[in-house]
Image (tube, rainbow, N blue to C red):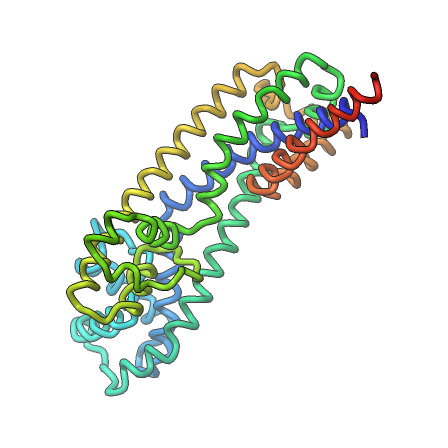
Length: 337
């Protein structure tokens, strides 16, 4: 492989990474605005309630009861659906809502809910992940179609313009540094990250010795509630348990704010970098007759498919090629000598 070809691929991967990070920031905003995780939970709670076998509690009624439960002031803020709910909370709140809606409360309510709760919640989390993936694909499609992102055109620009190619290669390290924070955050769930941060906090260990009793986190604790439940399962001492949960909530909120700030800053940096670069990623003319050109149409389809791979893929690709470049450059220099 020639150094020029590797530089071309580095420049192309960098362009795809910038676009993928833009897609990621839009997807994150969408999931927050539409309360996607809360709505997924609504469906999951409805399914659990359907299994109770209560007369009159059909699919539609179960969803209505689930909505009443998730908007209860004890677990909801400002009427928004929470991201998670514990099985014992569901048992208690069903009793209150059932009284209000004149529904039967089965004697074996707790057993029936516990029987289905974990399984349904696991499937709910899987649906959330799958839905996020489909939203990523949809956002990639819209951006590429509306702004006419042409992967073939991007590759042509990088491969034929040495000055542009060199500038992209020079900026790869800085881009990787910024992207590392975003992609790492995307792969490590907030709940897991918060507990791991607590376990590495020496001052917190001194204040709460029971923290050392927590096992390494081997689960994807994607919500605050899942992390809280995990801690309560590990610690039986009531006072220590409450202290750890309180510390966990503060750490979770701190990390959530930090991630949002990072995402916002990276989005701004991406926009600035795109403007400063001579690389033409978008066609702002909105001249859709360009799609009559078969090469442009194929290039846009390729861009859609490549962006749907996600930012972590392009981050790893760019990192691998950037690490390979010094090795190849040394070999080229040795051959020239």
